[in-house]
Amino acid sequence: GLVLSYEIGTNWGRFSAMTGNVIGPLMGYEVLSAFFLEAGFLGVMIFGINRVGKYLHMFATAMVSFGTIVSMFWILSANSWMHTPAGYDISGGKFIVLDWWTVIFNPSFPYRLAHMATATFLSSAMFVSGVSAWYLLHKRHSDFAYRGLSPAMWMLLVAAPAQIFIGDLHGLNTLEHQPMKVAAMEGNWTTMRGMPLMLFTIPDQANATNHFEIGIPRMGSMILKHHFDGEVPGLDQVPPADRPPVAIVFFSFRVMIGLGVFMVLLAFTGLALRLRGKLQSARLFHRLCVLGTPAGFVAILAGWIVTEVGRQPWTVYGLLRTRDSTSLVGREVVASSLGLFALVYGILMAAFLFYLVRLVAHGPHDIEQQYPQIAAH
Image (cartoon, rainbow, N blue to C red; front, side, top):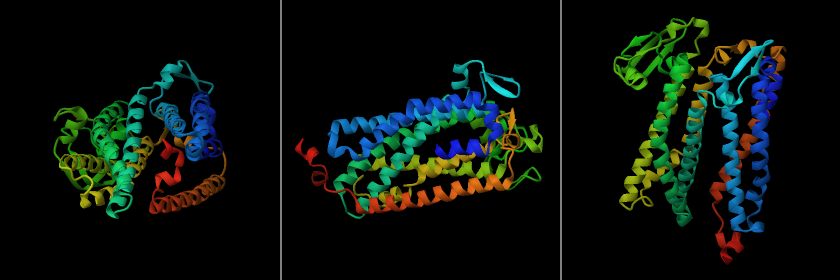
């Protein structure tokens, strides 16, 4: 959030000037309604368990979670408006709000909110299951590990299939409002009926074609139009300058989908093992859980690449081009500020991962020794 706020001011000055009447208040609502809530209870959650008791500690933890979801609401509303702008007018080269309800609940927002919220639950479940499975494989903290693995698998079983349904609705909404993004996701250069589902290809942006295509005939139309002969718009409907970078979008989309399928299969495998009473002892399954620990996070990053690269060359879709959104400063200035942010947060990321790996390797302390007031209950 800090990086984004600075970057809008340093690198995206013209975007900020033109959309500030819309984006500024939405970001302000996030700070006032969610950021302070999270920040206030975060210290209690991390440091307060030996000081406030388990019930107040649980309440603080729930408030941090609730605050994060409220943050998600406002941030995704602002981002979704950039993809499907609504409730605005343009006056004096600036976007003016006509209807805040229409701005907030713009056409793509409900689908993005549901998709992202489910993705966060999936990512958390994959991380918890991976750490728990690692303990079970090494025969450490087995009771603690199983009490983590079991609810994580329940969450995965609910959220992974739900994400397929939500993703389908989100895809249909994107096809309606951003058809060129969907065309890039599918590597579809030509408007056609009975579009195949492209499993693999190498998109050639310069020549507007694909190489080494492997696909399922007519299945793309079935998925996007729910009819084998449905007509699907191709990238030929817009000039080359208005097409997104197809290869990046195409492959990122398949990374996201592939990891989603992996999570669905893992969820149903976990259910089968649970019914057979082998969830705690299936070592091959535990290895798959450990392997999948970062799967949710990688899928989220791949999905955001699809979303943001796929809307190019626009920052506000169809209205404001990326090239017209940047600050009126030299490339060297932009590169230096971006490079500095990358360096600082790269160091922080490395420190975080180092601490996280050590924390997981160390494992939980004995609960009664670490939290004597809980043992007393």
